[in-house]
Image (cartoon, rainbow, N blue to C red):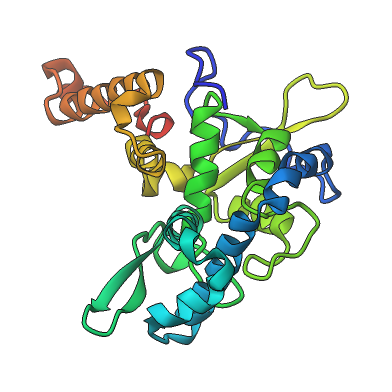
Length: 279
């Protein structure tokens, strides 16, 4: 994913522009599948995916997680790779679902999953099993941010395919992902889905919606991305500088609002705040 470019515009800009995209399958879905062929053939990645499904089932049923059960999922053949498989599974849980595994009984090796995200409260739609989708939404916001504050459908579906999520293919947790991303999250105003200006043939892109701008920030998204890669936010200099610059601009706007000039205090305001175009 390319770093954000200075001329791409703020991620919240244009949230009410353009027409909503079509329901039919995008070109990005067909292009994304080949990128994951090697992943599907990787036995450790397959075991990690099975482990994630097991952990999610335990979470939806509110059942404790026993270490012995996790070892059985991995099987004796891959027992030596258990730490790697478990680490990969936990990273996927945190990245996509915002869930973290915690040890609740050290003597008996019992664990549980807790939610780390609360983006949008109860209004953010949940999966068919009651799982929060805020983690997936944070992933989408991160992809958009890292692609210059706007990401094409091809870029979104190429990334999601690495998580086993494909347009037009029903997901056991998220249902039909195309509807979730282009309809549900758009209607909730977390995402803006619009036609790429002057594109021929027609192409569509995603931007942050006004609700995402209000409920989270680029710094939170950057911190999540950095943690996933085991790095500090400052190790992404272009993105980090953009975040700090917008934070300074927002702080300046707040300061100006708290201390208006004499002329501004005596005259009706003619300019609306530009804070909605910044995170």
